[in-house]
Each structure stands twice: as C-alpha cells, then as structure tokens.
Length: 305
Length: 292
Image (tube, rainbow over all chains, first blue to last red; front, side, top):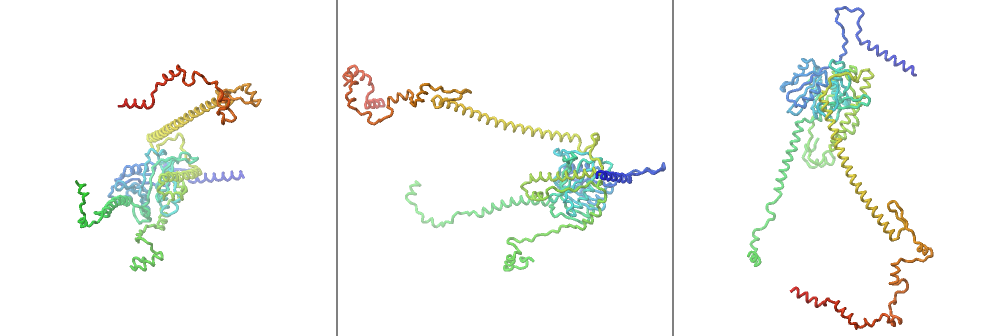
C-alpha cells in the first residue's frame, strides 16, 4: 500500500514539472544575436480599475476611495469629475486611462454616496448606495497588510442563489481581485476581502490573516455596506437588468422621517383644537328668569351687614 | 373584480364580505410597481463577461457558508436586539472570512504558492508605521484604563468584604465573651462543675462532706436556705401555725414592766421628741398659708 502511494505521488510531481516546463519559455538551441529576447509573461489577467469620484463627495468618502486605491495595486486615479458631466463620459476616460474596470463614487447633496462598479467597454454596470462607511484610518481597526498584496475574495454562499447576485459576484471578482503577477503587487497573501449578503445589502470587510494555522483575523478596514439599486446591461447605462425592490432612496427615507415629525406637530395642534371644542363655555344652562324668584332673607341681609 | 368599484349595492358587498373576498376596513388598492428582474438577460450577461475560464490562482475567489443564516434572518427582524445583532453580524462575517482563509490557504499550498512573508522581507504596508503606532498606543490606553477600572472595582469589593469580615469578627468576639461570662456565672452558681477559661479547664473540687452526704442520700442545703428554713419553716403544715396555744398564751417571758403601758417616763419623752412631724391637716394648713 505504502509503496503504491509513494509511486502515485511521484508521478504527480513529475506531471507538475512537465506542466511547468511546458509553460516556461525554452530558448532554442541556436539564437540569433539581434533577435528580441522572448520574455515570459506571467501577468495574464490584465485588469485595471479606474477609481475616482465626482465633485462634492464628503471627506469620509474621499478617504474610502483613497483606501481602496492603496489596497488595489491595479487601480488608477483620475481627477474628480464635474457633476454636470454625463456618466457615459466615464467610458471614454477609462479608455484613455487604459482601464477595463471602473469604480466611481458619486456624491449627492453632500451626504449621499452612490457607487458605480462597471465593466467598461461592454458592461454590465451596477449602481449602489453606500452606507455605513468606516475608513482604514480608524484606530479601532488594528490589522495591517502589505501594500499591494493580493487579497483572497470571500463570498457568501447567498451569492450563488440569484442571478443578479451571481453577476455582482463575477463583477467584484474581476474588479477587486488583484491580478496574479501584477507588477505592483506583492507575492504574498496576507489579507482577505469579505463580501456578505445580509438584509439585502452587500457588506464589505477586509481582514488581515494573522495566523495561517487557525485562521485568526484582524480587521484592516475599510468597511462599507453596498445597497444595490440597479444593474445595467451596458457600462454606465443601457438596459436595466435588475432593479432592487427593497431599495428606498435616501430622499424618500428622509421625507418619511420629516413627515413623521410633521405629523407629530399637526396631531398635537389638532388635539388641542378638539379639546377646546369639546369643552363647553357654560357648565350648565340656567334659566335667567329663575333669578326673579330669589328673595332676600333676613339672614342674608345680616350676613352682608 | 373588486365589488366596491363595480357596484354600489349593499347586498353585493355583504355577499362579498361573507365570501371573504373583501375584509372590513378601508379598502385601498395597492399600488404595484413593477421591478425589473431580467433573469435570462442577466445570465446571458454573465456568460458574456465572465472570466471563469481563468485558473483559480488568477481569481482567488472563495465561497463560504454564511454561518447560521436562519438565525440572521430572525435577528434582522427583531429591532430590539440591534446591539446584540451588530455583534452577531460581525461575528458571522468573521466566521465566513475564517472559513474562506482556511480553504484558500489550503488551495494555495496545493498550488505551491508562498503565502507567508519571510521575516526579512520588508515592504511598504497599507497603513504607515506612524498610524500603527497610534493604533498601538490607543490599544494600550484602552487596556490600561480597563485594568485601572478593574483594579478600582476590586479594591472597592475588597473594602466591602473587609468591613463585613470585621463586623463578623467583632460579633464573634462579643458572642464568645458572653458565653464565657455565662459559663463562669454558671460555674459560680454551681450549676456546672467544669469550665474552660483561657485554655484551661477548671474543675470544681467537690467538698468531702458534701460528697459523703450525697453518698448517704442526705442533702444539706446551703446556709442561706437553712436560715430561711429556720425563719419561715420548712415542710409540714403551715396552716394554723400562728394560732395561740395554751402555752403561748401563758408565756409572759417577753413582758417587761418597763415597757408596758407607756409607764416608763424616759421612754415616753424620747418618743415625743422623736416625732417632730406635724399631723396631716396641720401640714396642709401650713402649706396653704405659705402659698397665700
């Protein structure tokens, strides 16, 4: 038994070696001196992500964007875009920057943050509302990792349940995953991006791998929650493939809150008015002519005296 | 078909109510919004742009079980336990990441890709050293403050405990003292023959006479009793014991001529001089006079 096992192992290793040797560039026996040297290119999955934002994002969003840039060595930067520019311009910007993925932060009303993740020339793209942002510079997040090391991408099992989640998963893998052998990347794996679905939202976490044996972790940050709004077939536009029925726009939410407050006041006023109406001015309807029969007695007279 | 819209007749509404097609209360037509979910289109799109033909090492994606998904759904609905839920949710993310790490590192090891950074490999980190210093100091501060508060708490508890112990000791002492005094008293009275005082046992030595008497079956009471017995009598009939008998009536040994009938002048004068207090009526009169 033992012998056979050993044998199989040995054959496997030889197979591996053969495979490796297949990929490696083997110089020919005779090479001309002026021929260009053929280099082995290990970097096959050439994803480049453009990370930038519109004008009018909050400081917190800006920090989040910078954090993503530091964590993703395959990212490129771009000055903030004017608010008035149309979104499809981004496609051209990406083309100019030679990027095929785009992460675009859009600030609205100085408080709401939307995030576009797009596969640039052909789509799809998805728009999210970003909630609960915590940046990497928060002191309670104690982990640290190499700048540009490749993260593992951990996905919740729920990502395989529905087609739209599957699409988002594929999009995230291509966007957030650092390509193998990227020139700026580090050759070690020391952190993990976690995407989980909870409450119809995608929760993002980034952990440092402390111990490889038991898998103990420390959070590096950033944290944010992505509430999907729509998925488009094209990049920054096109036909809608999916629309989130659970999504409530922050404007609607705020309006509801305001209305609740307004209701509180109007109800109070109404109650006051009603109380006023209920309360009679005269406690008992007396007949004034009854007073005619009131006679003054001797006692009353003396009392008055 | 909604009967409310269709007709106004009460009968029809009553029938519908009985049939259960409508329910009591205000009938508001729900506005149904159509949400697009083009499953086929999405699947087509995934096929178009997916890079699943790449090897796993290029993608590094892992799919892990969400820990306790059923519980998460129920927790999400309960708003009251939001604090607790926050913690549980983070725990779930952590567990998911942990499971993925264990799986992923195994896969990487199989592909013979190094995951661990050697000790002497220095490179720029995602967070700067200055920042990490801050983090460390913050952690330390937190730890210190925790320790301090714990210490204070402990001290407070100790003080409380000490007070209690002291009280108990005092009470115990009091009790012992009382017991000792009691036993001494009993010993003195003769109720007990043996006492322990200051680690010594003191035993009463029985008097020989008494012992003998005890042996003989005769019991002799103490002096006080004896005297009382003599004075008031002991045993026998007490009735009629004070009646005069012929003998007692005839006994004149106590008669003294000097004392009899107040004939002794010396004695009578003495008596008079002794009685200085006036009578009651007189005293009252004197009092009244003084008042006025």
